Length: 327
View (cartoon, rainbow, N blue to C red):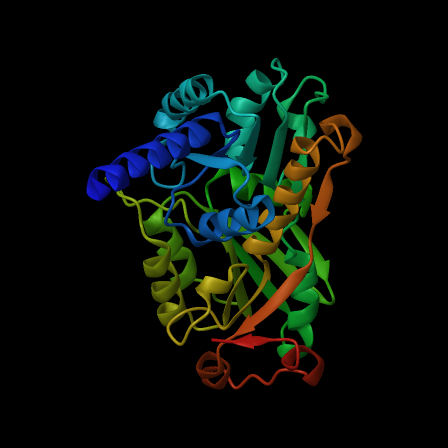
């Protein structure tokens, strides 16, 4: 009898729990990239730290770093189907591809939308900025990084910014170089080159004569001749091994004894938390999307590897060294 009572009690509790989960409001996160990408993982961790357990989190991945561009619209349509199926209280869109493909459709709804990781000006994705959409802009600290690198490599005269061929790269160049082919930053003559594929990337690195450093803000979208995706780890390690000059990045996870010398990064977890806090202000009824101005996240963190610093005989200024994380 006692065993039967315990079983019935368990079933009742389970039923109430399932009912509570079903009634729990949800947040749909549409990520432009794949779930294993470090930036994606960091942003999601930051978002969930802000939203807590009050809201159920659903996530859809467009996988735009690994899939060919011909698949982007199909994935965006699948994300829209997921949105209609789940009926979330709020949608969060990560990175430019997601906002470009889905922003105009969401602008026609009443659902509050929070974007994050946006490198471009959001106005480029809409005829008119909608009232139901706001979020966090990601401003890759490319030129500030060059200013910090100048005292680390005081003899440097020329820097190469090497990027993959992606919408993220295009957005970074729009915001920084602004249609200029080269700029001078703290005395550094800085040029950029875009690699259309993995072979071109390798050729640029091997023939980067005349440059004193390479900075690689984006390389996640590189593909081989047959369209196979090249992992970020392979790109970083090959570039570091085959470059005759120091290689720097804008991702913390690029820095290692086999990777980049250092990075100055927008940290994904803090970025995601900022977006999550904006979402909570809307969900809790404190503010409407149109009451929240877009926020700009450009605060950087230093990461360095001592083995790579020693390899190129580089010494960090004390002010940078005390702020840096070594890995």
